Length: 189
Image (cartoon, rainbow, N blue to C red):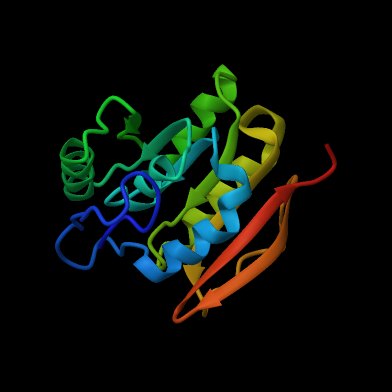
């Protein structure tokens, strides 16, 4: 696994051992960031279920101003922190070692940050996690999302997500191999 483009291009990243964490492939990350290019420079980027941190690290490499990685699995956190250390990003990226739902509720209440880009990639078999995260993001989009924000969910191609989660409407689906990316934007603002 490597950083695809930007200031950290070609740097090697580690992934957690075993099958508990499924890193986003280099090819799918390249596709994702080609679509996200208009949002990246100076963006506030949130990576939920961050795993190894590869997506958030790619965001830093491509010009995101601030990146928050949310991950609670201890083996993934160990690798994520090692990747940040190896790349000299420990002070550039905030790591939140909590459940995604708890983090989103806290940020919404605090109203401290509205994100430009949110990426989520829970374990494919944890279908309820998609509903929780997208539901919370769609409940009160103005508290968590910047005005022209995009929310992207990576999921199994065999598992389609809902068209709408509260104030979030799906606008695009890209499929690649066994994976799919569903893109959501806020409506009714």
